[in-house]
Length: 195
Length: 195
DNA sequence: TAATATAATTAACATTGTTAATATTGTCAA
DNA sequence: TTGACAATATTAACAATGTTAATTATATTA
Image 1: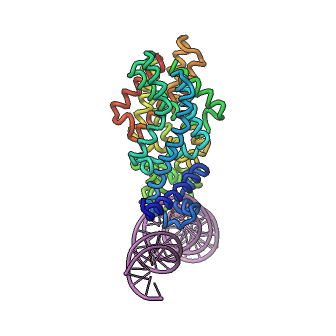
Image 2 (image 1 turned 90 degrees about the vertical axis):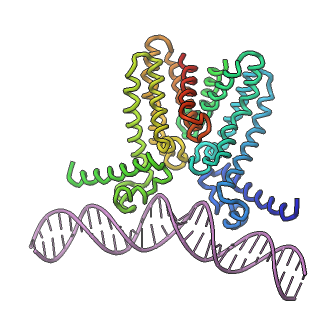
Image 3 (image 1 turned 120 degrees about the vertical axis):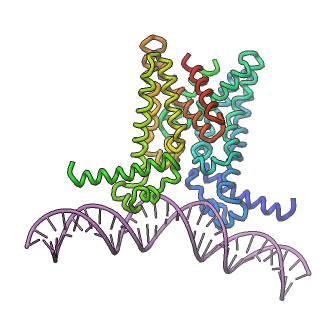
């Protein structure tokens, strides 16, 4: 990598780090071009020398968060040999990540379709985020003969839709109203699906 | 009602109608104070003589949409005596409404928590919107002895979370990718839950 | 050191929600 | 019918947003 490319790489990273910090803490509505650039130590216009627009920068953050999420899920899934347990632990890790960072859930799932979400690449990342949590466990159940390939796919979708919906309502502070209730509801729904 | 109260009532209705038309058609991001007032035939500042802020006006729209949705669901549910069928038809009507008006789904479920959604009253309306579609059918299954009260509640939540998640991903044009696929997936998931 | 290329900043524009100041309209007594 | 006052609507303005163009500062090279 040339010196100038290294510089460019560093600059983009400054902005990405600043944006991630804001998204994690205060959430999407605070992640304005001016706030991000401020936190990165540059002027707002400088940001546009390194990113086409604000959405591109946010997209980089989504990819980073996704990688972070996957890095949390994988060891949780691999901590057991039991297929059903793999799913339980994977899904719980998935949920816990978004509970810990509501701003990231907001970013992943609640952004207006026409803005960040409309980029099909971002939608792909989000949609796929549940797979590392479920796929290994389901594969195992299939290989053990407990499930057909077809059933496994249906169950993956059930889990995907259900935990997303669950978190969506939890995020709106409706039901369940607290974390204990969330985990209890999650367990019950998962049990209903994989036993 | 006095003459001036009638006037006030009419004015608010003009703004609500304009806002609903925009929300139905172009969606939330187009529903600005200026656009709504324009469509209502008044200046943007006039709006603030009748609503505390834009969120209050949008909230009125949510309530109207909820009533409209319920008016579609009820006859669908009552069109059969079979408990499971009541649920199938109710949920399908619920989904169809939001498929027809993606802007209303966006308004109901995708708005940032800190803005419209943070009003607990609006969150209540949204959360409850699934009940007319499920409750009658579940009640019937309970009264027939097919379900316990407890199971019925769990299933209601399962359905609530699942169809919301399903629609969320469908709205992002991911999976299912078309309406036929959506209905097929919906049927499969409902079958898995109530049979 | 001077000339040039690169990179960062300020200024500016259009758009947003919202408020204050102003203009218009309607009502009613003289 | 006119004049005073209240009610209502409109324009002007503010701060914040994303974004671009013009300008300034910095680095590189001859």
